[in-house]
Length: 571
Image 1 (cartoon, rainbow, N blue to C red):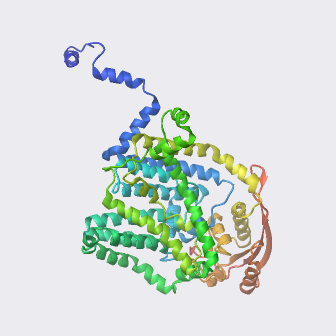
Image 2 (cartoon, helix red, strand yellow):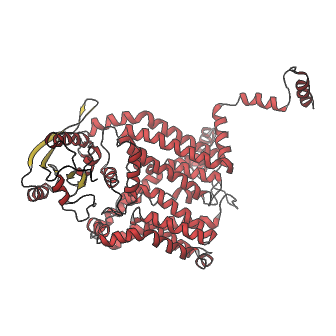
Image 3 (cartoon, rainbow, N blue to C red):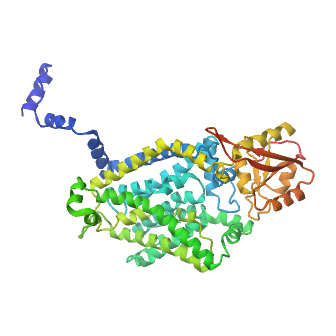
């Protein structure tokens, strides 16, 4: 009452009634003595819990993750050229085709749009890759809030942000990485369709299926897993009797029609590529590759799981318990601490069943299928198959995720990221000193691209239009040359379609063979057959980084003069 009276007196008389001594002033006084870390922790907890602010917080977190890890990767890879997968995606993006020989077109389209906005530089490729992972974090949060409460949802996203696929392993933009956007979108649309069972939900699900398939056919593993999950779910009949799944099938087919038409016109080149490159392995070879696949991907998953376990099991003044219980006793107590029996209102079991079933299927079935059919199981194929693991774990009803566990995990992400921000330039320099002569990662293709561009322009005073060479050689030159010549890959049935041998002979081309290539003789034979009158050169390139010399790479060059006048770029 005195506070109100003082305020009223001040309003009427214009005089300051003196300091307030009520409850609010005492609270403010106490707040001034609260450490900054506790204030930040309280703010994070409040933002994560409030449905009105949690989405904005996750977007801000994803943006921060994207920016910081773009800087980290740019410094970490500063002694290297971009990966050939990234250069290949850039090359595809020079023309918006319905398919690119090896894969469906979506990754090329996105690269084409991206590099019409951003410069063709190394940092822009890492920014593209981290933008993909940042979008993946946001979409995974949208999935999580359908399955668990907001605290657990953010906890699962923080685990993903510590998953190497979203940091170190996510440095190269390619169809595998892009699935971290299209597959979460598919899972989100599937959960929505299973819940709503409407025509509109079916349309969204069908479009999500088409979008995922336009990334890479490998997504059929997760699409099939979702189909099995819907059949194993207790509410399966309600879903399959609704229009949603049937509308989804129709919408997916319509969305895929242009690409299916291209696939037929191209004589099913992506399938030929997959069979030629990854099929026909012996059982023992496949068994070894599957073992490597499991070891690699489980090892990557153990990193965020370890961070999460520490955050969940951490106890204040743990050293006192350690003295009392001993090391083994304290370890057992810490392992038991987050687990509590009883009902859990923070987990929505109906939706959680989908996540558990899908993750189990995609984790187990593809490697088993590889064993049965003799398929080369690449470790990178696991990039898109385990993003649901953090959510599957935090959706366990007996696991208790406290507010402090969330705060600890967020601070772990921040500390780890800031440490990497500081040490990434040091790691880059040390890597060059240790592995600089190792070859491929440090091959000076960017310098070589400039050498060849200058040589071409000095001879013909026109744009360099076509480069002929293997994917490992040709696509990086497409990326780094200011002329961005279209790549022509000799002896590959699954060519990208960006140019042709006839066009190369008309516009002229530079043919390149790497002297360290195991198939050098085949490359030379192709050049002798298709460039008999070419000018022959031998060039050597080398890169220096912080005074350390990289490997000297020797190239055999064939320069074929153009036979038609220069016209408008036919890129």
